[in-house]
Amino acid sequence: TTDNLSVLEAFANNTSENPLLKKSMFNEALSSINSNTNMGDVEKSAEIELLYSTYANEMKVSVDDLKTVMGVSQ
Image (tube, rainbow, N blue to C red; front, side, top):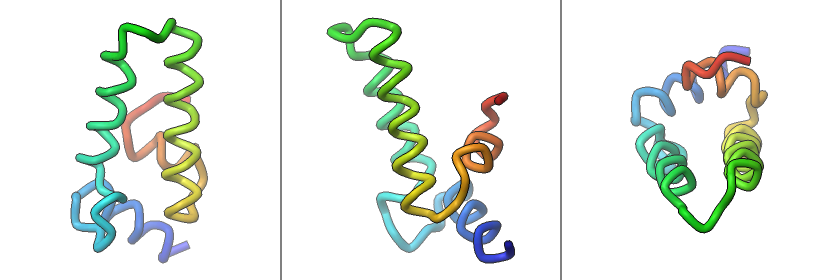
């Protein structure tokens, strides 16, 4: 829907009114997960999926739509 599109656009452009729902914050969290040397690849993958799921849920969009905005192939 248009609402979801505008939410995703605000996220991608870092213009969301919610500071936690900005691409820059998502990327920081993603970077933190990826640089965590105490986690194995499987744990990192699970944490990354949880991150996508949490953000998608907060924005009321699908994980697939969020991954598309992030440039992640399905």
